[in-house]
Length: 259
Image (cartoon, rainbow, N blue to C red; front, side, top):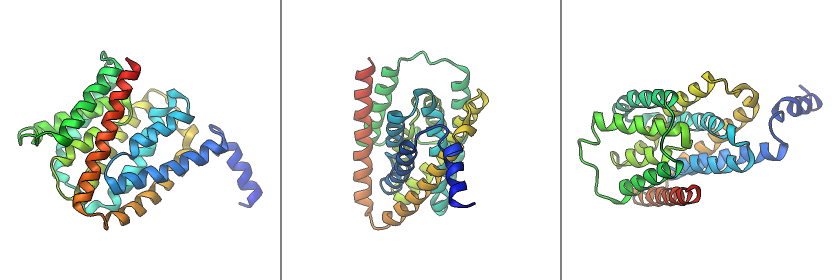
């Protein structure tokens, strides 16, 4: 394909849903947010959601965000597969499936402000409160956490901070935290995308943008995991908690704003 033919293809298909400026911005943001999550453990998904909310129609944000985050998290999981806690994931998956199933069948009766406030307060507790009892961190507790966060992800888009805060209670190793978190979020986003696909969301129309954002995110993840090697465990956990706290405070502000 020569340059002229490529430009014709790009204008016809890749820019069928967005302008060139929006296309470039979102691809760049995908790289940066994936880098952020790879280095600091959390934050990239919410940043991406916020960026998409500025430039895309509201009705497409959560489905497209799910696809991009699926690519970002699956890439991070593959690059750090040696550190995945498969035992935790085996407890997480059944709950995630139940949560997505309920979310696809039920209407949410809670107001957005209630959801935001509840999630924010629980994140703050997980970061700064006493460690959860072993019973909560066991098979049943993990399944319930997976079900609740998977249910919420259909409606608030980015349940990552809550999942991250829960997983951090179980692991001190930064690589295990990031790798296991990546697999948990991959499963959530995969299930979420299947729901939107079943209800007829036109994912294929957005495919060129999504592919470019996923590839850009993979680059950000690769660089971020290299940088993570030079971040001390103490600095990682402190920054991890601060980022989650900032996201929780943002949710409290959102709860107030939509009240």
